[in-house]
Structures are given as structure tokens and as C-alpha cells.
Image (cartoon, rainbow, N blue to C red; front, side, top):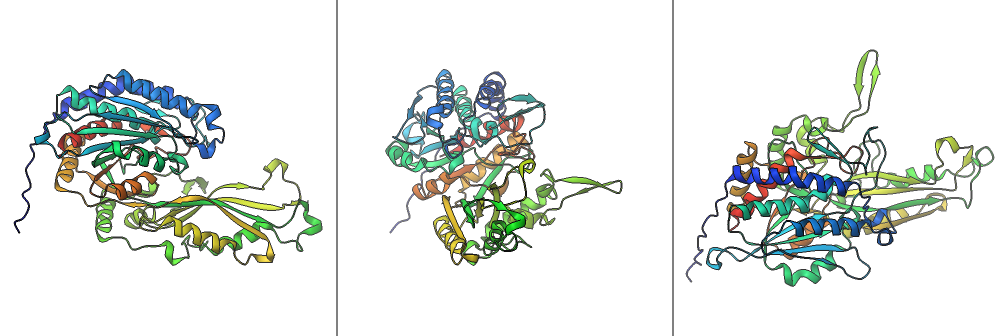
Length: 493
């Protein structure tokens, strides 16, 4: 049998300097202003706003984004807000291809983003706040601008850069959700409902990720998964005098420590179940070594370490490792437990001598990209609940899990397009980095479109502090990233 003949498709050239000029103008005259309004709206994800539907904030940001997109008058664009009963809404747009059929593979570009936000958190700078946007020295401060409100706006600006140069492009669709910070539990039903309209997806552009620095284009190669839930230890029905009962009634906090010791080595932080670990693939290890050489100590120095004065010199808290390679692997391919919330504790000023009836912790367990989340959640529940010390009532109520993601191998055209875009707009080669966060959509899309290339990038570079205080969007980097997206879409066969 003869080997199949692969037709060479013509290259679609985009002038990089003009593209950057176009997207810079869009950012300076429109997008920063639109995101300023967006930041001012407390559109918290449904896990953090049980009354999201009545409060209407998610609808407001979705509607404002839709109105802005429609005002751009993108040739051929159609847009709608899609609603399924009882679920957070999504925005869907569709832009037809402008290439001749003979010059195209016929595949679709899928652009993704989300508009829901994390809660406020404390510790903001005195002149900043989660819902009080401030633009300062090229940084737009406030909750959600970088994670991930900018994505929909940048996506449209990237398309317009193609249009302004009359560069032929493939069909482009957009899916903007409002449930990502809650684990995207509403997204799969929308993907199923919209699947016939998505087409044959050949390229996914997800701008909800991070950057190792602001000096080059960064491609995310992997994402950790997550298993989260509330662990509660109950020993009494009500609080009692600690002098009367301590020594006889076991502390719910001590029991909590014992139960967590089943899951984590408190000395090293290593997760004990072997099934929560996986081997790092050889290509990811090689990329991590290259990235460690690029970033060096910045891998761990980027974080706001606590410090104090010690004999006239400043002493800083230390990371788990100062080896750049191991630091990268620790935050991308190592399972890690975090306690992100607590209940059952009075505030310090109201903490009397009372033995508390219960202790509850919100647990966030990050899983390596190749570990199945559902299995980890089931094992976690059994491990924590079985054979409770002192027959205390120990419960683990899961918030569900999300399996991580390992990117498919890059095809030659995609690799070349990324390198060209990074050199054109940053003057440096593209960097490859795993991320410790979770984007549930990516695993869904990899399963649904196994041959698609995945351009997972983002603006969350050093100090940007998504989810925490003083979150900011690095606008100069966002402009170059937007132009890079245009370059890659133009290069898609």
C-alpha cells in the first residue's frame, strides 16, 4: 500500500510589528478600561457565593464582556450567552474561517477563558483591594484581572490583529465559562451541549496559566490535578471548661493532627500514599532542567517570604529546597497538601479557656498530572475516616476532584510558530514550564480532541499573586502574549 500523501499548506504570513502595534492600541484604548470595570464587580465563583444567581454578579460580568465583544464588530462573529438550567452560564462565540478550503486543514481554533473569581482574601496593600482596581507602573491590580478576566478580551484583540492585516485564518470559536474557580463542574455539560458546534478542534488556546518570567513566551506543559474537601473531627456536642475536661476529653485538634499524619509526613511534607505519586516523564524532566537553568533561584525567590530582624540582619523563611530543578518538580509533579481554611476556632480576642467541640479544616490536595483524581478522593476519604482515634466522629466531605493534564507532543508547525512568536515579540526562545494549578477543562479537551495542539499560556508571572492579596495583571506582558496568539493562529495549517 502506498504511503498517504500529505499536502503542504501555504504559510499565512502575519507582520509581527504591526500585530503588536494593533493589540497594544486595543489594550491601551479599550481593554484596560474594560478590565477596570470588571475588577470592580465581586463576581465570585459559585463555591464562594452560594447566592450567585440571585446576586447577579456572574451574569453582569458575562453580559459586559459579551457587549464589549459585540462592540468590536469582528467580521462574521456571532455570539450568544448559553444557559443550562441550574448551571452557571457560558459565553460562546463563533468566527468563520476566511481561508479557501483548499488552503486549510478545516480544523477549528478553540479559545478558552473564565470570568468567575476567587474570594477577597486578606493582606492587601493599604491603597489596594480586591474590588478597587488600580493601574500602576504597567500593572492592573485587583481580583480576577489576570485570573482570568483578560482572556476573553485578549482573544478578540488577537483575532482583530489578523483581520486588520487581512491574514486568512481558520474557524475560531470561543468558550468563556463562569465556574472555573469552583472546579468547572458546570463546564462538561456545556461542552457536551456545544460539541456539534465546536467542530474538529485542532488548536486550543487557553490563557489561564502562568509564566516563569516576563521575558519570553511560556508554554504550559502540564497541570496538577486537585482533590479538595472538608475534614471535620467532632468529640463533644458543645464547648466545655478546659480546666474541667482537658486531660480526660481528647482535644479535637490533636485528633485532627493524628488523622492528617496518615496522609502527610509533617516533617517533610511528603504525601504518604504511594498511589498519589507518579513518575515524571523523561521529556518533562528534560524541559524542567532547561527551565531551571533559565530561572535559577527565581523559581523560589519569587514568593513573598516572611522575614524578621535577627541581630541586625534580615532573616527570611526558607523553601523546601533551594535546588531550582527540584523546586520546579516540587510545584508541578509532586502531590502536596495544603490547609486553606479552618472552622471551630473562635477569634483570638474571643478565645476563652474552652475545650472546643470540633475542629474542621478545608483541605486542598494537589495531585501529579498523571494521577486520577476520583481514585485519589476515594482513597483519601477512606484513609481519613477509618478507625478514628477515641471513636471520635471524623468525616471527610469531598468537594470533588479534577484530574491533572500532561500536554500532547508538539507538532512541527506548532513548535515553529511558538518559537517564531517568542523571538518576534520577546527576543528570546519559548520557555516550557509545568504549573502547579489546575484547569479542569484541559483534561476534558485532551480526551475529546486528542489530536489538538494546546497553547496553554498566561500572564501569571512572578509576584502576580493570583488568589492572594495584591493580584495584578502585567499589561506589557499581556500585550506581547496577545500578539503571540495572533502569530500562532496565523501559522495553523
